[in-house]
Amino acid sequence: MGVLRSRIPRARLGGRGGLRLCCARASPARDLVGWEGAALRCCARAPGGTDVGLARGCDAGEDELDAGEVLGEVVVFAQSFCDVAGEWILVGVEVLPSRPLFDADERHAASAKAVGVGSLYALASGKGIVAHREANGVLHTYVALTKPEEWIASIDFAHPKAAKARVAAEFAGWAPEFTALITEGESALVPRAIHALPSGQRWQRVPGATLLGDAAHLMRPDGEGANLAMYDGAELGRAIAAHRSDLEAALTEYEDAMFVRSANAAVEAAKTFSLCFADDNAPHGLIDFLSGGSGQTSSAPSATALSS
Image (tube, rainbow, N blue to C red; front, side, top):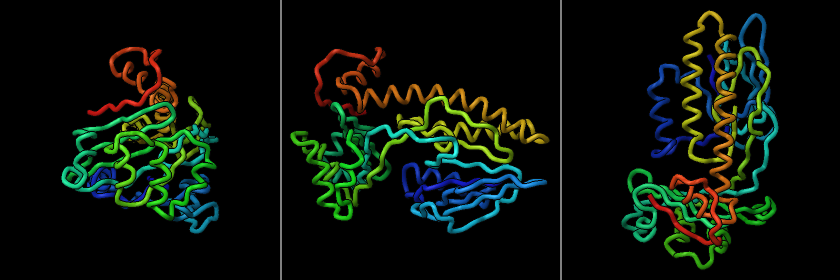
């Protein structure tokens, strides 16, 4: 089996990168995992095996810089913003992850107190600041803005201080412990557009290959992406174990269940995402949703922070 995972930076010491590194080191099949390559083509070969063309590196573009053959009966593509399954939908919200605040409790006490021991959601209509606490006193921040791509393109992120000031200006009048999560981040902002595959999308079976995680069902972020990817992996392994002599049956069984599961998750993700960033009543819809209501309110728009 070959596994290809595309466009994911090297693991950080903490957070999701640390979890990935821990799992990779513990896996007896770790040598079968290829990192930081975008798959440009995938062709089944007779009598068996799969040929994959790769562009190495996160910014490799469309040129095939390095063609490689993956030997084995199954290739799994994971965690990629690929369009193997179809076209993206541009959701229209830009998320700019600010690199963490380190030693936050000592060096950024007000922001650390605002975030609390878990996560912070400071939301208003069309924008928000979301932060969470990681190990060793680290705060990691995401800034969400409903802006056209041209607005993001107009910011020179090669000059971090000016870029942070430009983004922070969108939150003029907000509490300084919130805006400090943007301006005091200890490395440059990274602009990222939010994309999603059409809800309920399927593809015809391709012998010898399948998708899991974002490669299969890229959707609006709602905190479930990593959970879905790990569940996909577990279910794919279970199906292969149950059909050792018929891998196509295993992949068909896995995909049929995954299509239903991911379609349902995509609907919920769109709802949660809308409550956070596309609701004129934000954050009141999210508060109502978390309180067991319908997620719809008639409250006037305002900015409110939720901290856990």
